[in-house]
Image 1: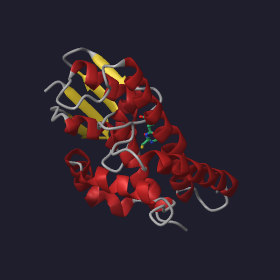
Image 2: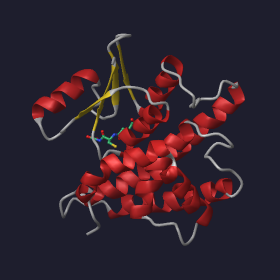
Image 3: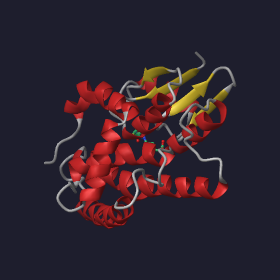
Image 4: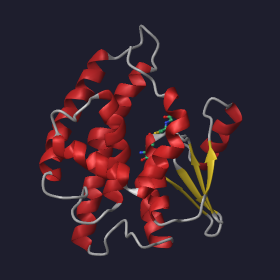
Length: 217
Ligand SMILES: N[C@@H](CCC(=O)N[C@@H](CS)C(=O)NCC(=O)O)C(=O)O
């Protein structure tokens, strides 16, 4: 087995990469990184100086691949399976990449801002930044709600990288800014994602860690 994924079981961006791996039953070794441990942090920083996970290491090809979308691009090219995560058609691929960017940049990263603020000590909170993030999430929910009214998966008829991005973004976003009552198509889409075996497996493996998710207040 040549693939190693440096990850954390609760990390939303790691979930995105793991959905892609499980989708095609791609064999890999998961190495959980405790960023609070200086040695483990140093090992991750050596692989990817930014110090964020997921990072995929491919011993067979001598590659280190950071960034969840780039990991999925890499898997689709070098370890393809039954589920094509990026369509071969150029225009369809562009639509998938745009939707992947949409969920990462306009929902996932704002959700991270809200969650990250919960971890800040009193006196160092950023209420203005959090309110801005929540406003932007609401705007993105509206866009996604319109799109999901007429399609089963994020970029159309087929499951793709865009759904790998959407699943953890929407799952954790629902915890910090619920949308089930206001955006029914989006909520129904999250249920479809949760029923997808690849994401169901990710969630099951994350379950023992959910108590570590920071609560409001
Ligand atoms: N753009 C990156 C984002 C990765 C990211 O934000 N990872 C978080 C975990 S979900 C992380 O490593 N956080 C630790 C830190 O920021 O120190 C990707 O798509 O992989």
